[in-house]
Length: 446
Picture 1 (cartoon, rainbow, N blue to C red):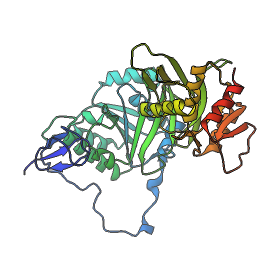
Picture 2 (picture 1 turned 120 degrees about the vertical axis):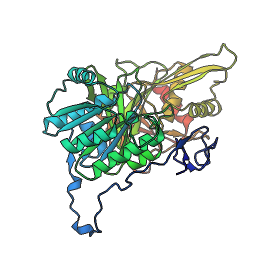
Picture 3 (picture 1 turned 60 degrees about the vertical axis):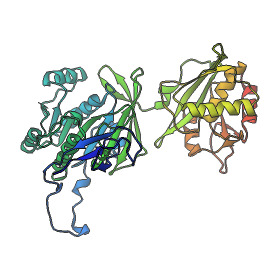
Picture 4 (picture 1 turned 135 degrees about the vertical axis):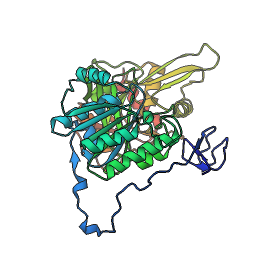
């Protein structure tokens, strides 16, 4: 049979090699894939059956007793599901999986931990450091998917862990581990194991420089759930989010803190991203972001200084640099503060990355505060999207954000004009224009 060429980014197939993928537009992503003779049937063959006669036992879930983890999964691990966990090297993927395995083992669930990257002794050292030492956790150091399949069918564990899918190898495929064909074939074998029994499978996957799971794009389509563990390795917090979940919502996140003995759940993320002390400093403001369905407060810091290198620097940590450039244009045009001869540095405390625009007004306030030297009150919350004409636009779930600030003792909130009346103990100041908002903040600052 003639081989094809498959794009490693989107899975587009072509009978000949191409420099640029016509589907996703990426360059030099086509890899030669030789046909694999294997059983393509994932499920055991059964005649059609009425929907009413199908048992609902597959809805049962295994509780890991890590509430942040269970929340993201939709209430626990569904029996017979295939879960893919991705993240950068060293971010804590194996640590989180091993913690979940330990908790399940305590509940009597047999766990088979298969590693293609570590020896059993190395896994033992990590487990000992975390306090995960249970006789129901069985360790296998192997990369051959056929041997792993035999071991799983013989032991029938409640949870099978594969760390990592890029290290697995199938003898039917004429390519090395980690190739597009190998990853796809090994995942299909694991999917068949999961769907024909009550065995849940966790698969650990590495990510590319762009943040996507390494391997073919079809990998994410094959599994039931795709989780990403994110965070800056220079900081101690981690965020777990679901990019896909057939058994729950993708609007949930879990927040963890990396400690010596593993990942610790953070029940109140707002306290994690707020600075200590009783006094604020010029260039600092507080806003509220939504990550999934959870609201938590973040500290935004800005620093401005005269330009000495001809071209002003624009350095942004945690916010898109193009968004910062747009907001700086609003600062100069609508507020009348010249920034064309200023270096501007922006940072979200804790290394958090913000994509939503509800923090626009807080960013502007921090920049204005740094430029003019006034302090924004520590107990003042600033929320609002900023438009190009200088208007303050409404944001989603405003009441949820206000309640989070109220819980932490905030006294004042600068918010967009609201159509609904908000019931809160916080003094609300509704603003329609950026200029009015900054002038009010200056009168309250020092």
